[in-house]
Image 1 (cartoon, rainbow, N blue to C red):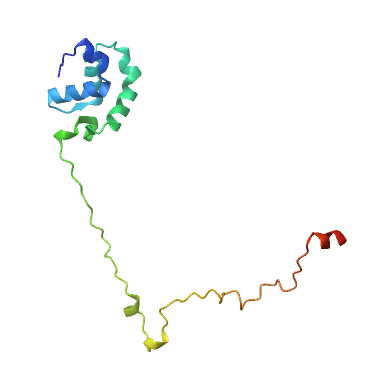
Image 2 (tube, one colour):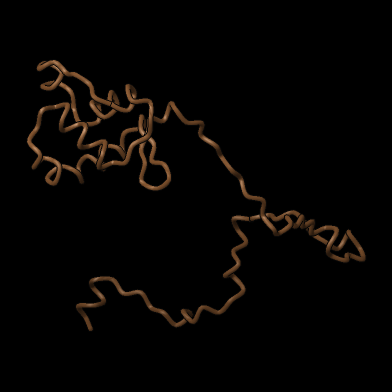
Length: 145
């Protein structure tokens, strides 16, 4: 689990890069606290960095696709684990609805399945909209009132 980093690596690598090296070399899963303490030690940082940076470290691991969170708070490299996709069977059966079979139609000629939209035939033509007494005034008519 102990890795040696050069000063250049310490200056250029981020927490998650160092965590990757630690998990890769140890070949075992680790709890986040243990992993972050190993990162701090490898990067020769003060111990206060643990309390100041643990939340940021957690966010890094969650967003970095190289890592995977396991049960009981353990973390490991994603390449060490197979991703299983489990599909649950629905208990409900799919219902296939066919309207033509479900409806009892005595005479199929009476059923109009085509919808025709005629520009001249508006559905509002037959309805009374209550505007038959409406008068439109222009500016001159309004001045004369």
